Image 1: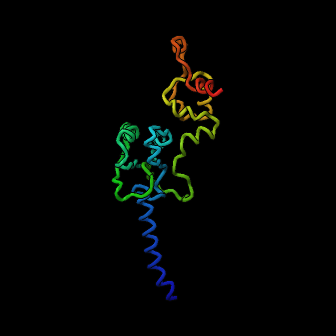
Image 2: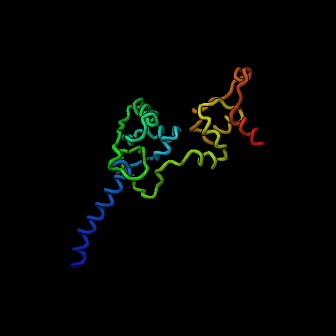
Image 3: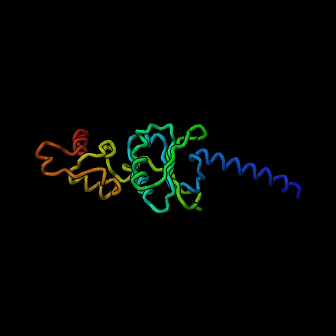
Length: 187
């Protein structure tokens, strides 16, 4: 019986230390409040992760937190989206943070599932998993031929707004699909 009394304070201290460490990893938030997270490398890559923007638009989202030591140029698309939506965002000093998490989308509600994946998968991996050329990522904002645009819409519909379909006018002026060009060069 005495062992249980001694263990309870130690267990409480251990739980407190675990919670503090978890909060410092997730930009001063508990993991059970996090919807999605991006690493600093994902943010600096310049790719705008549509999953984050879509989550920011949901009613269940409370705020977005970003690390202050990441260049503002890289954070700007997410800051602009938050301002447009009217969502609170906070820049967190990296002095008391651990790990490589650079952005978290925080929920108004607590999640019960502790095993869920909150870190957004890298886009190159995602595109390759669905069978799309990773060149799509390097050509964000480009105009694609009908074939490659249709493939994109079928396999990665959340990224269709990042591309446009080539028009007849574009083709007449010599513009070509960058994915077709890469595929030709490989063969």
